[in-house]
Each structure stands twice: as C-alpha cells, then as structure tokens.
Image 1 (tube, rainbow, N blue to C red):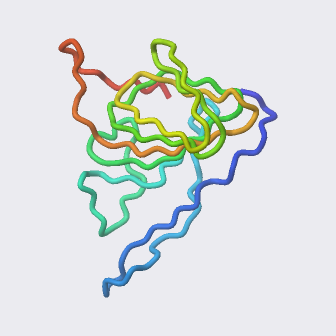
Image 2 (cartoon, rainbow, N blue to C red):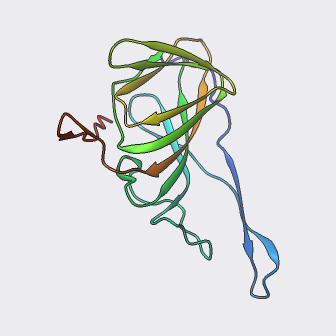
Amino acid sequence: MAQNLPPRSRDTRLVVTGHDEKGNAVVLQDTCNEANPVGDGTHLNTLWSSSELPASIDGDEKKGSDPADANKGSFFNTYDLPPNYSGPMHRTTTLDYITVLQGEVVLTLEDGNRVVLAEGDTTVQQGTLHSWSNESSKWARLVSVMLPAKPLVIDDKELEPLWPF
C-alpha cells in the first residue's frame, strides 16, 4: 500500500435519536465514530447494528458482532477504500444495500464483469462473490446496510460466506 496517501475523509458523525422517560423524542448520542483499519488499507466503521430482526428500538445495540456473520440482525457500515486499491473476492450470505457516498469504485464479479459505480449509485448484493476496487487517486466511501437472508442453495449446495479480511 502506498505511503503517501491523500487524507481520508473525516469519520462519520452518528446522531441517534430515541425517547426520554416521558416519551419525548431526544438525541441519545451525537458522536463521531472512528473507523477501524481492516489491514489491507481500507477502513470499516460499523455505525450501528442490531442483534435480531425485528430490531429493538428501546436501547443502544450499537457495535454488534462481525459483519460477515450478520445472520440474525442488521449492520450499518461505512467502508473507505484508499486510492489505487484492489480488494480480494469475498462473499457475505446477507442481503446488502450499498451506495457510493464519495468517489468512484469498481464492483467486479467472479466472472470478471466490472461495473463502475459513481457517487450516488447503489448496488444490491445478494450473496454474490465480488470485489471492490478504487482506481482513482482519491479515497472512496461506501455505505452499506447488511440484513440476514435465507440460505442460498445452487445445485443442491448452500453457498457459504467467504471473508478473507
């Protein structure tokens, strides 16, 4: 990974609302969550998670288990990709809604099909083997919501997650 990277965008501000003891709407949290380096130059920030669906909305369920094991609850993440980054193929067995917040990324499927996604573009991942790359000279940021999904069976074989991070 290059040492002279441009600065990464600030970490995501998280404002959480809820209710006080009288039932009035209040701000429960207003923080800036720090993203965690993944080890390959990317940064993952789990902003919020729930341990079950339907989710409980009467307390703080932030920062659950590993996003690759989101088979019971939900995960809301940002994922920062450094310039000139090429990530490994991976698969979650979740239903993922992913939007490009900043920059441009390339989604590559296992057959080599490449889809360029720009700011505001969205993909719905349904357990596919894929990789992310950032071919630009600037950081890119994705936001994702990961939800549990029923097992996907193809040719009588249940697809397994592949999480090489």
